[in-house]
Length: 186
Image (cartoon, rainbow, N blue to C red):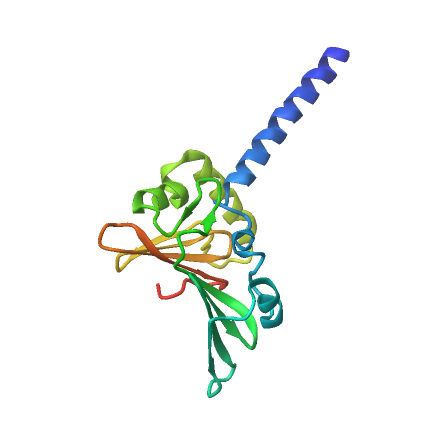
């Protein structure tokens, strides 16, 4: 009886490790805001100023409903909708994300290696499982999708859209992080 218990515990342990590994590989990174001082979706303008200080420049479009503002800092811009962050534009090479520390200056190949789930069986399996559970309402899944359009790469990494723009040397020169349910500009 003891031997069967140990075998059952061992099998459950191995299955748990596999499930955890798959879940952790479903997204390239789970927290993009950690690289930018904790600023993420829904961060208020007052909290943005507390974290990053007074912006170098702010552009307010009063004639729009809802109100859209752009707070510009050195190497990073925040687009606010009714004074809440919903998009971040990064041009600084000092801001890096995830296990592979990708960012401005990374190559196109590094971006594809980090995000293209078709290239890696573990990520492909994790994304497939995540799509099943996140899209049970019948809508077409976007999670884990990678789009190549007009020289850019856009990817949905767990509901956050990341768009990489490249220079003539195929190096990232801008990263747009948008908190939407559909791809920006794709």
